[in-house]
Amino acid sequence: MLSSSIALQPIKIAILAMGGEGGGVLADWIVNLGEENGYFAQTTSVPGVAQRTGATIYYVELFPGADNLQTPRPVLALMPMPGDVDVVLASELMEAGRAVQRGFVTPERTTLISSTHRVYSIAEKSAMGDGRVDSQALIRHASSSARQFIHFDMSQAAQDTGSVISAVLFGALFGSGVLPFSRTQFEETIVRGGVGVKPSLRAFALGAEKSVHPEEPYQAPSAQNVIHTPKNKQVSALLARVENEFSPHVHYLVTEGIRRLIDYQDPAYATLYLNRLNNLFAQNGGQDERLQRALARHLALWMSYEDTIRVADLKIRDSRFARVRDEVQAKDNQLLNINEFMHPRIEEICETLPKNLGRWLMRPHWLHKALRKVTEKGRTITTSSFFGFLQLYLLAAWRKGRRSTLRYQLETQRIEKWLELVAQAAQTNPALAAEITQCQRVVKGYSDTHARGLRNFQILMDIVAQQGSKLAPINLRELREAALADEHGKELEKCRQRLAIN
Image (tube, rainbow, N blue to C red; front, side):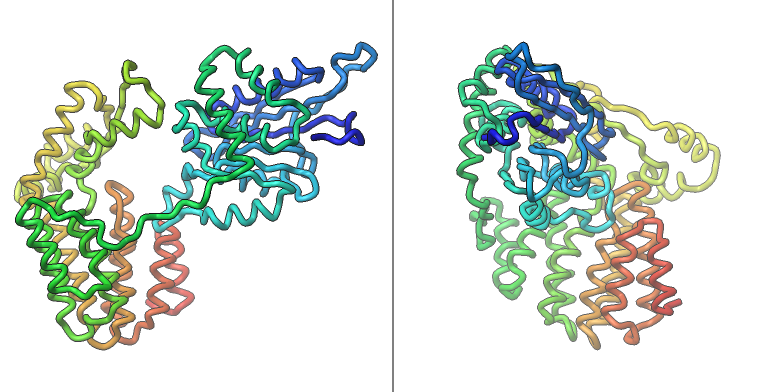
């Protein structure tokens, strides 16, 4: 509750929310809560930028005395000022971090209320490596910066109650105890809104409860064998090979690799994966545990490269339709259209064809030029329509012919050359071999992203081939991290110059 010593001071509240999360509704609720209970109230908003590069900031000021005719109407501010905010509500953890960074949160004054779930920013998603910000580091920093920090997974709470995150934030605001209003007054505000009242009240109640008794930290299930005995004999045989032919410290990784490659292609492809691992592990230096773990992970990742067949397959899965419907909170009786913005380069088209036809089409003749013009603009496919779904379904079904494609031939050659370099390094320096293995991280995605990553990867492999055993593992690690930091290769070139590696 506000003390009487600051009774004539405005209550200043900043709300940071992304589009579709009800930030405007939350601001309107707070304004209505104040106006119905004797406060002057004002709200303003500054829109953020699209595509998850920033949230909209809603700013609310409440000033007591509106129910007293003798109280002069106050002049309220339009924007929050650093060091001068009583409450900050953030719909996502990174937005809480942004509020701290902007100076809106101070340990002497501010109550910070935030969801702990993450919606990754464009910078995090577009990083060549793992660009995610450490959530625990954000929580620690926010805790030390605020007078009171209330945090839990409000997105999950909203899903559990069939409501939106703004209602959970409103409940947490009540539970924080910083506003001079009763629970009844809060709930009456939701009822006056008249839209989605019942689920909003459920979400409010859960938010109020969690703000006082935050949930226990989530404990991931044990990584020990959560594998049920499969009915397929080929799969059973593959899992038996893992138990019999591989050391226990790689069982989990190899098993996950098998699962991934069966999902990607078929059991025979997973068999190729095991054979490749066995060949490497049996060579001199191949018994190094760190090298074995790195190979088990990165070989599976590379063998499940993202070609047009894989992209089409992932886009038409039932799980994706269910996830999209859940994300937009569509009802069972609501129609949902999903538009895919497809912009394949001519290289992707050629590589999806059988290798001889693909190589012919890659040559600069009239058909190549005509096809390049057609692909420059891209197109939109409505996956939720019959014909849109059928197009992607037929492309995904070509997975049966993937081994005949030009892309499969090219990727097989690249993988084999990479494994040769790993095997050569392992004979004299297993630590260097492990670093070469992890260079696979540079190759990812598809289209232009894949092309740039492959170019940087080839630069790294050329350095490995030239330097041989003279290359220190830590230097290759620095070069790899530089390649991951900048897909255009500028940071990699700077690192080469600094390390004097030509």
